[in-house]
Amino acid sequence: MNELLPQLDELLFSSVDGVSVVSVEVTDIVVRVGARTTTERAVCPDCGYWSRRIHGSYLRFPRDLPAVGKLVVVSLRVRRFVCAEASCPRRTFTEQVPGLTRRFGRRTERLRSTLVAVGLALAGRAGARMTDVFEVSVSRNTLLRLIASLPDPPAATPRVVGVDEYAQRRGRIYGTVLVDVETRRPVDLLPDREADTLAAWLAERPGIEIVCRDRAVFFAEGATRGAPQALQVADRWHLWHNLSETAEKCVYRHRSCLRSVPPAPDKEQEEEEPAASSPWPTGHRFAERTRAKHATIHALLAAGHSKRSVSRQLGMTLNTILRFSRAATPEEMFTGQWQSRATKLDAYKPYLDQRWQEGCTNAWKLWEEIRKQGYPDGYANVRTYVSRVLRGKPQPVGPRPPSARVVTRWILTHPDALVENDRIRLKAVLASCPELTTLDEHVRSFAHMVTHLQGEQLPEWIASAKNTTDLISLSRFAQHLERDLDAVTAGLTQPWNSGVVEGHVNRIKMLKRQMFGRAGFELLRKRVLLA
Image (cartoon, rainbow, N blue to C red; front, side, top):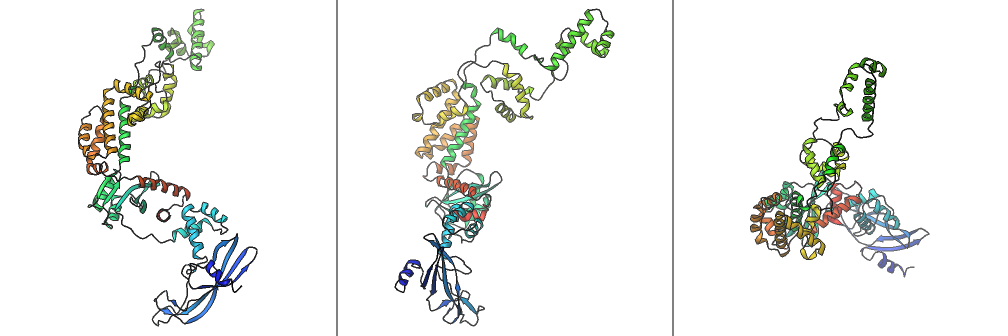
């Protein structure tokens, strides 16, 4: 056994100095390794003086990484030294073995680092399940505490930093993530997305030369105040995304150009339409009851009965009999709440009829459209009007016209990437609407600037887009670009972008889902920066 001890030292403690293996005991479930320290002196943790005077010794039993499916426990004898400095408040102290133990630690450093790696990768519950496989079971809270106890990484000053927002609680709480674009590593997380917070962070790092961001106002203001020496670069993907939303709004405003003219209705259909829209539908219980009463009253009156006699026979008041006797048809009795009552929907019925003829048969979508126009009531009234009135009206015959989103996709796609059928249909749409032709030309020219990094052409493009009075959304988009002209021009000229930042935002979403509501800011920051 004595011959194997040096080999065990090399095997078990190759990365640790000052430890010697004394014995090894193997049982069915546990491997106990007896070890002792071999250093001659130790440093006081308070005053920093070295001491050789030994006060005593005791055993520590830190757990180590398992071996061949068995628990490994190190029976380590450590010494307590007497501090030689008279002014030091600490009289005695225990030696620590760098790379093996720490104060009050019940695990070796390599086991601790393994658990930390599992916690950073998988967080609480999933990490706890993984430790069961390693035969070093710990709770999810233990893993989270180990992550929270990690020190912050050393502060770095990137030359090119990317800035974007992430949601701690979607729609309510947002933070800011900062990424070194050159190394593609996250640099820091901020607890909010305020301009003051970003400006203070940038002001502490004067070496930043380029700031990649989207066109959010708070990021633009924070970068301007915190790093006035840095070049701000607007992300090209966000610019193209904003242009795509603008193009869809423009196509939607000219959606009437996307459909063919519906055929004129036949005369027979025009004659049948009033009957279909009659307020007395066949089979309605109130309508049938009124018809039956009207027929009975007029039959008795025709047989020679007086109105008072009819009132006594039918159990009705005389005024009711008089009203029925004056009505030539049952429909004349309809003077209640079903008919001729003004509603808030009346002002929007022509628009609903027009959209129905254009092919939109979704009542919910129709309600959303008129709600944007100011309709104050709920969805039920629109659904009732569609089911009772519009369902009986004929729709245009022929193929359904393409939606605004489909036409927008055709315009935003490179002509060489479109299939032949889509290219032909887009050509027909543009031929029927000169405004959409103008939109297509502006989208193509902007795409050329994005792909070929020709930002010097942007002022000319903005001036041309602002003159498109028939495309209000495009004109507004150009005006917004003009407010942030320097950053947008740099984004269409410089090769930098915020793509790596968007990737880390998606990674933050994954880390949040892993922690099941335990993703507080400090814990989330540790995982993002250290994993």
